[in-house]
Image 1 (cartoon, helix red, strand yellow):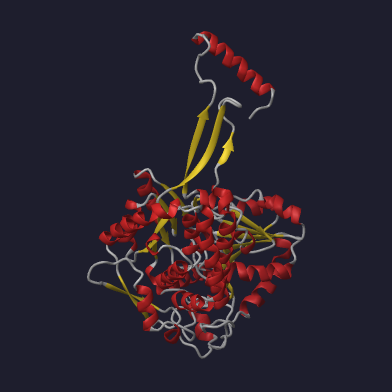
Image 2 (cartoon, rainbow, N blue to C red):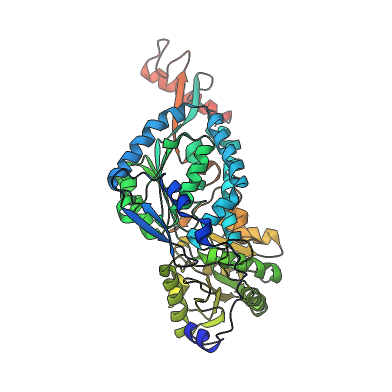
Length: 543
């Protein structure tokens, strides 16, 4: 399918393309009945006469839910309710708060089928990719449920004067966190980020994307069942340009995941109020296949890296950099695996890739592919929409011959499209990987782990996976995850992932002697004594 446009592929080869997965008997309408929508919608903070906003099921294009729309006044009410609840919550011992997370962990694993249905219904992704969200949230709940006390406990620090000064670093909650979460990973990026905020003693006002608000509302319901005070987590729904600024206006700290353009606006608004913010933004992530890579493993890894959640994953791979000596062989294996992926929207396991979430994502994906093909790129696999499966399906697509002037080369597609580029040396590959203003995630494939780590250390991305796509680094929840450059500020996971929701407070107690002239010393004598003391402390290797 060398130089055919996506439309031509669909016209001239109507029977070609990825196979369809078995559909299954369960429908979105049956899995998400009006009674469930009404129950979850009651969790939205919307106090006036309801102004309803509708969402669409990507798998079918049919209406999914009608939800109450919050106003800026509702956001203010949400913060008031959250603040009243936060003081008593923060006064509880950390272990009491952590116990809620551990109970939530067990409830989530027990009732995962409920939320898997919701995630699929709202996003259109395949069930294995919805399960990735359950995995990620359960791991975060376990980690912070077990480790929060260690992260948050008072820590003894070296005082101004050894023995005479007792210094302690304490951690205090920020207060009420404003949390703005996107549609693509509605469970992980709503409650997954909120869990460390809660265990650190904060309340949260969350604005999820309206399209995927049911998943966040379900998670809130389950966390309340696990013991979280209901007012501690407020959920508001509405248009981003209206409700987002209102959340930032009242927050003591802002956590945002979304586009780089919107992230800049959030950062500016937070900075104007002198409140902190963590931002996970866009990416144009690269995967490097070195000359000594296991090509079968790399091809399988590339499928996961590029097409999980139909490419609608901030840390997915959109640029494949392959050593010239193995490029043809790798591409053959990768293309064969890509063409074999089963597409479908059944609410069960069995499909390898699902749908895009909206017509907007479909239009961007189609435009990037068609413009690239028109300018001379080659479609190696995929390259066309699949309306026979659903309104927003697009085949997993591999492009070769992409040049810098094509939009798909530098712009984030956020769809199931990857471009292949060849290199001759590791230096060339590193330079190409680092040639973007983004710096979120990358992947390196080699049979030599030491070489892989050496190359990884030269990549300007917040996470690097050696011989894995993205799950190894993201799933290492004790280690920080986030972006460099235009991919954001701050980190989730690990110590940084919870300490960002706290204020550091130093409490220093001076004993026996003041830090001032005493015992009859004048200022000059005191300075001489302190100078000698500082020299002695350095000689004794005090820190």
